[in-house]
Amino acid sequence: MKKASKEAYELARHIHNWLHVYTPSIQSNSPHTIRTYSTTLSLFVGFLEGEKKINPCSLNSGCFSRDYIEGWILWLKEERGCSAQTCNIRLTALRAFLKYLADRDISYLSIYQCATLIPRQKVAQKKVIGMSKDAVKALMSVPNVSTKPGQRDLVLLIILYCTAARIDEILSMKVNQLHLETDKPYITVVGKGRKVRTLYILPKGAAHLKRYMKDFHSINPNSNAYVFYSRNKGIFGKMTPESVNKQLKKYAAIAYEICKDVPLNLHAHQIRHAKASHWLKDGMNIIQISFLLGHTNLHTTMIYLDITTEQESNALATLEDENQKNIPKKWKNDANSLTDFLGIRKIINKTLA
Image 1 (spheres, rainbow, N blue to C red):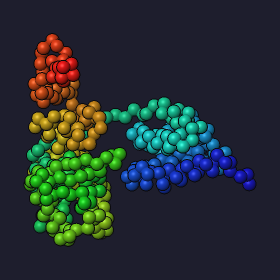
Image 2 (image 1 turned 90 degrees about the vertical axis):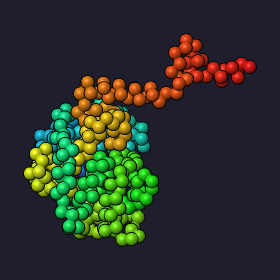
Image 3 (image 1 turned 180 degrees about the vertical axis):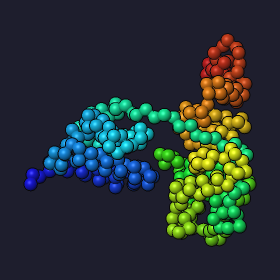
Image 4 (image 1 turned 90 degrees about the horizontal axis):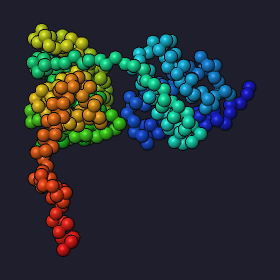
C-alpha cells in the first residue's frame, strides 16, 4: 500500500492541533464553537473521501481549493439538505481552519485568501416575533413557585428579561460571576468571542436571585458551580438551551390564554429581543442598547431591532444631542479662533510666554 505523503501528515497534524489544542485552550472557544468546527471538518473530509475519492495518499493543499470548497457547499445543500444559514456557518468554520493553517505555513496563504472570496449564501432575514410588556408579565405569572422547578424557572425568566443576555450566557454563568452584595448588584457574562461584559440588575431582580441562591445552593456555594444547574447532573451540570426552550413553550401555551401577544412557539431569544425592544420604546439610546446586548457593530443592533430608516435617524439624532450636552463649554465656543475653539488658548499662551 502506498504511503501517505509528508504534506498529508502535516495536514493531519494541523487538524488535530487546531481541534484539540488551539481552539479549546489557546483560543478558548466555547464548547458550541468547538463542536461546530469539529462537525464542519468531519463533513468536509467526508465530502473529499466520498465525492472526490481522496485518500491519505492523495490528500494535499489542492483539496482546499475554491472549486472543492464551492463543490462542498453545493453538496451540503443538495445532498444533506442544509439551509443557506447552515452553509454559511460551515463556510465560516472552514475559513477559520484555513486561516490557522496560513498563520503557521505561508504556503497556504493563497488558499485561505481564495476561500475568503467565496460568496456567502443569501439568507432571508427572519423577523423575530415581538412580545409586549403585558405578554412578558403574563409569562412571568405562569411558573408554579410552590415547586422547586417553578421557583428556578421564574428566576431564570426574570434574569433573562432584565439583562437581555443570551440564553447560553446565563446558563454558562457560574457562582463566581454573581456580584449581588454591592451597592449596584451585577453579573458578568461571557459572550461571543469570549468577551466578558458586566450587566447590572435592578433591586427586584437581585432580590429574586439572592433568594434563589439561598434555596438552591449551600450557605457557602462552590464558586465553580453553575447558577442554573441541571437537576439530573447536579451543580456542575449545565442546563441546556433546548430544555429551557421546551419548557418555555409549555409556559407560553398557558400564558397565551392570559395575553394573546404571547408567541406560542416561544424561545429564549425572543425574551432577549423583547427587552431590547422595550428599552428602545422607553427611550434608551441605541448605543447603550447595543452595548448591553453585546453587539460589536451598531448596524447589527439596527437590524436586530428591525429599526426603520426614520427610527434610525431619530436614534442617531438623539445620540448626537446627548453627545452635544456632554461637550464641555469650551468646545462649544463659536469663536473664529481655532485655539479658542479647541480650548487650548491657555496652553498656547503659557508655551509662548
